[in-house]
Image 1 (cartoon, one colour):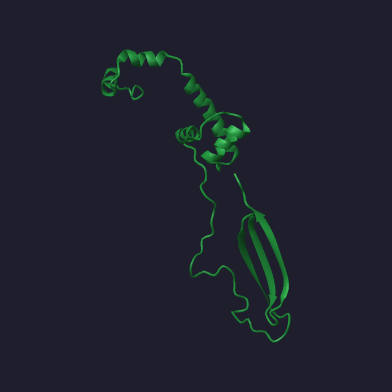
Image 2 (cartoon, rainbow, N blue to C red):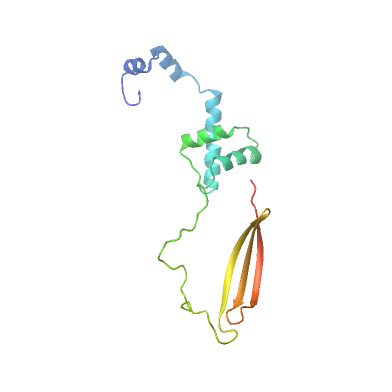
Length: 161
């Protein structure tokens, strides 16, 4: 309120504090907690910039405690990030299906019947969740004989934080 050039007497009356307490607070050195919060806020800002603005409170907290050895509670990290106006990117980007728009061109015009071998091959990719991660299976079929021409499967491990 003093920055807005309001009278100190009026501001102290509105906030129900004494004028002497206001002036004593102005001349007092910052508390150890406020100094620590300012230091940790600087470290959080550095980590947030280094992550290109993607890290949220959980990852910042993990980096502070495990990576840098700074003892701090995750709620304090969230509070300091909120005060600094920092926020991570939530969730993963997801593909949105737009109805009425084909995702790929239909080159065979839905005519899958063929008279000879190796005229048309079709493929399919499937995702199967398992305990160790996801398994992706891809198969290439000959449309005439319906036999497997080729295939491949890969495993993507589960990320654990």
